[in-house]
Length: 331
Image (cartoon, rainbow, N blue to C red; front, side, top):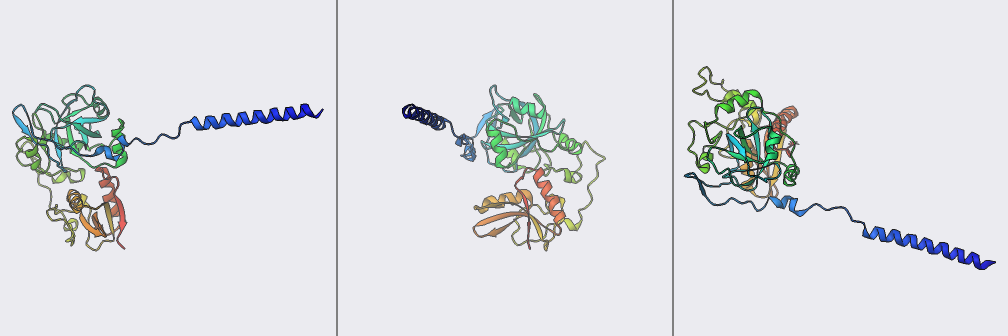
């Protein structure tokens, strides 16, 4: 009578082993988590290609790594098959990241420049269908194009064919100022006149400084706006203090129109660089200064007397695309 019981126990044990074996087999064949593709990592933005000069309808364009590129002009539809929120430009390095603002609506989006173009002198930039759709514009729409340095998270979104979050809409008053700078055809620089030299277009009379909503009143009057009057002189409180590490050649005014003081206890830090030249370049762009910490060069804006003033500067810097900026106490 014991033999059937043993057979039953052996059968049950055998079935259990078979079940465990099946589970083990399933676990071995299941795919693990998908790792991030190297092709879409930060290395995908390098090496940066500048390229050789070329000619379009008699005008020679010389690609140059211009960090403060800021122009107004007209957009066109990019070549068929252009994927993602991308675009083409004649002189910026490939790839580059730019903010495109539709001057009719104020809507601003981040675009990755990946190709050379447009191959016509009448247009500033070619945009993919996805970029045009995100902006809500079509062929020949007036735009502002400004080179920026977005955070890696937003770069990865564009490299993967997606969209970065829309920027804050440009105020109507600034849009009117920008529209007055539009040429009849082609493009016009808003800041450094050297931008015109690398684009192949002759500089327009009286180039203006890079525009900001908070600096709208400081724009000089134009011929088509005779009623404009010069802005009142700035208060001495907003003059940048004489800092020992301030970048020579930078703007004299305080960054972002927020008062600064030499003995302030708060600052806004934008980054730490192992290459001093890169830190100097960013400091000039943001009207900041550089401090050395060990082997790193720290780019900062300020100092500010109160944390509230530092928060105002931080908000304005983030609006301009410096999302990694943060407040630091100097105590």
